[in-house]
Image (cartoon, rainbow, N blue to C red; front, side, top):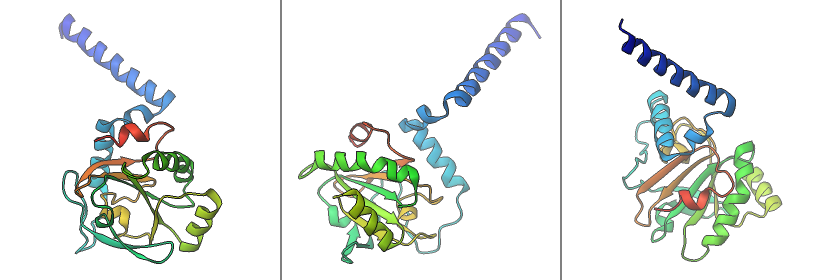
Length: 198
């Protein structure tokens, strides 16, 4: 092995050790917060996910999100995403027992208020018990629409492209119903507005 090859190998090894050290000391958060990181994470999750039950349509990035029906807290039937056509929609899949989900709710509520009227519509889909969700909403004062689904292999999260069921999970759907972005994990304070831009 010549000297140039040895120098290149040492440089590559040092770079790899630097990346590992960075991940160990500060976690993978910064990478996961990028669109490239989210796409890589989503691809890895898709590849290792169990098969989706036959007949369940799963949304794919860039494609129209297949409509599905859920119940609101008032027991009304809501068709997602058709009910919100004409506006971009940020759909956040969560549960009342999920710590990161609960932590990001104030930021989602603030973003929803900023966007009221003509901006991005925020919709929460709780994979949870209706009574637990109702108590949580009453306690926290969340005012954007909250729908409820039963967790399982064909729940709303799976239909929106999250077959592993990681929570929280958010998607951005265009005004014409196409899946634009997917987000695995919670939003940090101040991240939502930038993420929700087309």
